[in-house]
Amino acid sequence: MQNARAGCRAFDAAECYGERMHYPDLATECQVARGARVRAVGWLAEGHVFTRGDVDAKVIPALAQLRDEGWVHVAAAGPHECELCRGAREARNILVPAPDVLYVAPAMVIHYINDHAYRPPPEFVAAVLACPAPLTDEYFAGLRRFLDVFSTGDPMTADDFDRWAREHRELHAHLAAERKAEAGRKRFTWD
Ligand SMILES: [Zn+2]
Image 1 (cartoon, protein in one colour):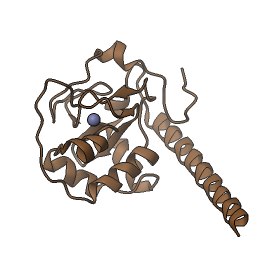
Image 2 (cartoon, helix red, strand yellow; image 1 turned 60 degrees about the vertical axis):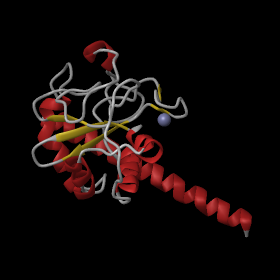
Image 3 (cartoon, helix red, strand yellow; image 1 turned 30 degrees about the vertical axis):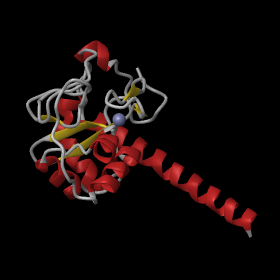
């Protein structure tokens, strides 16, 4: 079964892993992945305390780029509302491959850092800052080490992964070309 969004397999996370949104930081399971090498980050929820503090400012643009251009093994589910303020909605997820573990965060983590002073674990921050830019060969080589994690339901083979990666890059190359064309049209109109 394939989702309309290239690179994502339709996958009912709620059905597989339960509806709950809260997972402790560095737990080996979260709503969209589980396994010995999985590290959950930023699965905050009402009624659960979380660490607050300053975060390296470079983390936010790096996370935003991973959110916008990164590959994820599951399709975005229905949007989740921030349980802390009800003022933000987000459906996407973020994968951050590190040498030994795969960090899995909801894209809402950006909102939690910006608006709720959430401080993610330092090893996650280090992994985000060390992560190769999405769409690069190095980035996909990093993700490719976690085929077992991506094997939700059907096993994901290396060939499957390479195909998803290729489609993902083609999609983003197309989107970038469209943005460039759009920017060109705007310039033409304004001049
Ligand atoms: Zn909020």
